[in-house]
Image (cartoon, rainbow, N blue to C red; front, side, top):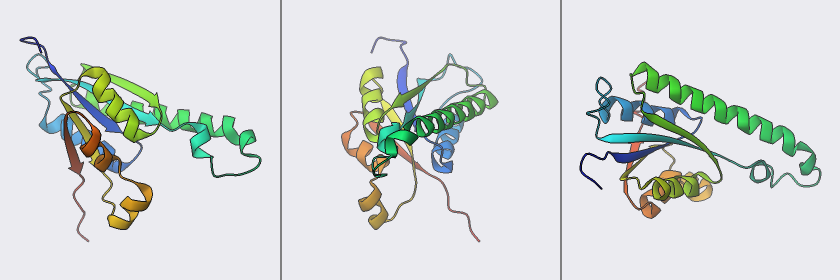
Length: 162
C-alpha cells in the first residue's frame, strides 16, 4: 500500500439487527466521522442478495412461477438494507462510503469482496447461533473467519437483560 493510501474495510450487512448493530459499532468505534481525511479506512458496505432460485430451491413443482415475485421481494429487501446503511452513515457524518449489493451466498460474496477491494479488514455481525443451529444453518461469520484473506472482526450484539 502506498503511503497515505487508506486501508479498505468491508462491512457485511443483511436485514438483521445483528448486522446493523455491527455496522453501527464500526461507525462509532473505527471511523473518525468528524474528519474523513483522518479516518484510516475506506468503508465498503456489502449486502449479499440471495438469488430467487436459491430462495425457492426446495419449493418443488410450480416454483418457477413464483420466482419473479420472490426476486422482486429480495430486491426490495436489498434496497431497504442499503437505505438503512446510508441513514446510519449519514447520521454519523460518514460520507466516504461505497455501498454494494451483490447476488450470491453471503459467505462467498463477502470473501470475494475482500479480494476484489484488497480489504485489510472484514466486519460481520454475529447472530449468536448455538452449536446446533450453526451446524445446520451454517455461520457466515465462522466461514469468513476461516476463509477471508484479511483480519475478520465479528461484532456481537450485547444480550439484553430481562
